[in-house]
Image 1 (cartoon, helix red, strand yellow):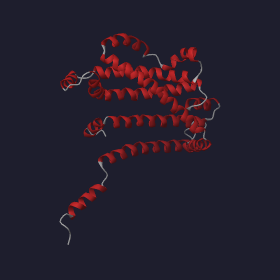
Image 2 (cartoon, rainbow, N blue to C red; image 1 turned 90 degrees about the vertical axis):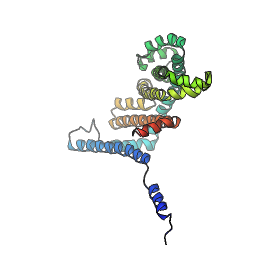
Image 3 (cartoon, rainbow, N blue to C red; image 1 turned 120 degrees about the horizontal axis):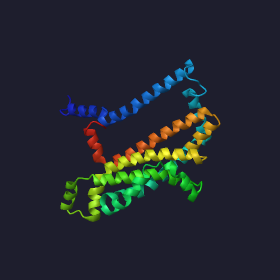
Length: 282
């Protein structure tokens, strides 16, 4: 004779076996791009073997994969990828901390905005790589020169976005915080900073992408190690498979650091994740 709660227990067991909505969405976000990439690679391989693409300039993905494996086994791959990743992290932190501080100050204090905003607007349209000759005058062709050059435009972008994040806060939100006794540092940490975080992370994501582009560009100009230098050297000596390996690794590394920043944003702003799920975007 079955127990009275048997149907309920079976239902709970069945529901635990069914993938949650979050798991299904994650798998969909993973499988669709992966399937698309595989289709593109298969079409590329077929076009090369059919003679529509010249293998000298567009080597088949199987050859590129073989070259990638050889570089990974030799350790050269990890040297260049690790060097670029390290430069990106250091230069991004060099832009993140002072850029956020300056931007928040510009958004909160009118005096700071009037003082710093003209200089920021003057420098912002200039690409980071254009500052490289000036940096060389003071620091030479050193590692710090590469890092400083890669940090300039991300610093300006973060400052602009941080100021806009504070300026866009609703007045009612600040008044509500003051009504609950939030003043000074408490108002900033409990009200202003959490409310500004979504727009801050938009700026961080854009700055990280720009910083990665500038890091690779600077490496192509003045670095022997790193994915940029590896890519440029491969092109100069016509090692086409290695050149494509460099391009692929730059793209993969960009994806990893972008999704890593998004994961950090989700941890710091769980309410934002819940809101996106309600909207069906997560």
